[in-house]
Picture (cartoon, rainbow, N blue to C red):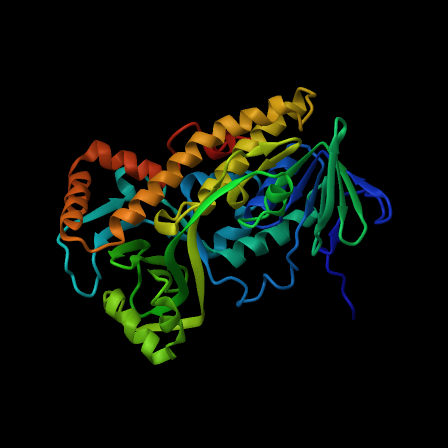
Length: 427
């Protein structure tokens, strides 16, 4: 029997046919992890949302779609819970109970200095959770179709976008039209919305590639996330459910193609050299992926009746695992700004409303971009004096409880001006 894919066009009751214009409060371009979460948050606050995603939903459910897993900090988990996504994520979420950072390969044991965080020093709440990206995507697919006020169009692209005093008018590549008060660019690093608005982008390459794969291991990881700093870049071992770990192996661009070309036995040999044997026998599960690493940031997050969130606004090095967390922080802040404006009857696309979002997120994101850039430059080398300084710095933080607790709370995403969703409060 033939079935209908609900994500081809998931419409709220009374939605207009494809030949008429769809009316909404907000048009979200990009239905990925940030755009989908924003859609849930806004719809939950009573706004009508049309979300357009270029990705075919059937594609991102497959095991070969992405390969990456994301560290969901405690503050970000509160956001996902508040907007109704967490129940679908929780069964496959691995709690991060401890974080251990060291200098050098675990197999060599060549550094006596390390930084160790234990969540019990702050209470019962874990630092966060490791979740495979396709699990998050699947949760979106299970949640969005049931939400009132949501029209989800995928696969679809915006072919033309215009704005005036009344709002924005978008024409999709299949001829459908959307009218809204505001458009949100949640369409990733190569954001079409950012480029269409003429927002300039500052960017540079790190000359590094992130090699990503999943490993099954013999011994339990006990919820410990490990990050080792090697000359080529950080090597992260991140715990997943079912005695597995997600590896993010940062290597120089000049070496990455040769590593990716290794056969399975050779690749596993190189992996063990860096991984060590503390988790026993290893086995690579599934494909390997390689992603070029770079930093980029938009000169502004807002334009006329448009704002940017997550990777469309900023992209950072994965060294601290904060990319998605900063995107969800954008989502929580923007959702709060728009929900407040909606209750007051304000124009959601007005410069005054958008300026509040830009001020709120600009400093926080700039600080995180600078921090991850500095950390990567500091730790991705083997210069003896620099290495000694960073090792002594880690040891000092490890021995100063107040400073250590601050960094632990920062890792949990609980530092700074938190949006209501990150405090576990409703919009």
